Image 1 (cartoon, rainbow, N blue to C red):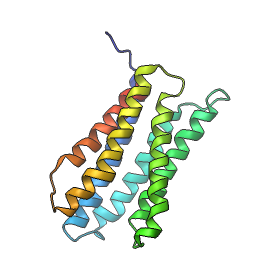
Image 2: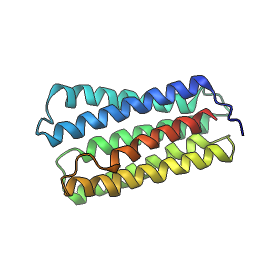
Image 3: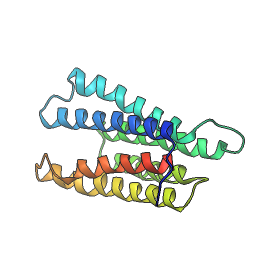
Length: 173
C-alpha cells in the first residue's frame, strides 16, 4: 500500500504541531519548576501556542472556496476554541468555572479531528479519530494523573506528540 501525501500540507501541519508541542512543554515545564512567569514559558510559549494553532487551522482549511467554507469554519473554529479553552483553564478559576472551558476544549478537538477528515477518505478520517482519542486521553486523563503523582517524564507528552503526527498525516492524505 502506497500513501500519496501532500508534501506542503504535511510540512505545514507538522510545523504547526511542533509549535504547539513546544509551547505546551515550555508552559508545563515553567510551571513544574516554579517559573511560570519566565519570559520563555509565558511570552514565547504563548506566541508559539497561538501561532501554532493559527498555522494548524490554515494548513487544515487550505485555500477556502465556496466548496470548502464549511471545512474552513470547522478548522478555524476548532483552533480558536482550543486556544480559548487552554488559556482560560490556565487562569486562576474554580473547578466549576473551568468546567465550561473543559467542554469547549473537548468540542474544539472534535472539530479539529472532523475537519482533517472532511472531503477525504476513510484513512484520513480514522487518523483524525485516532488523534482525537489520543489527545483527550493524554490531556484529560494521563497528564493530570502524572501531575498529581509528580511524574515529569511519563507517557502523557509522548501521546500528545503522536496526536500531532497523526493530524499531519491525516491532513496530508
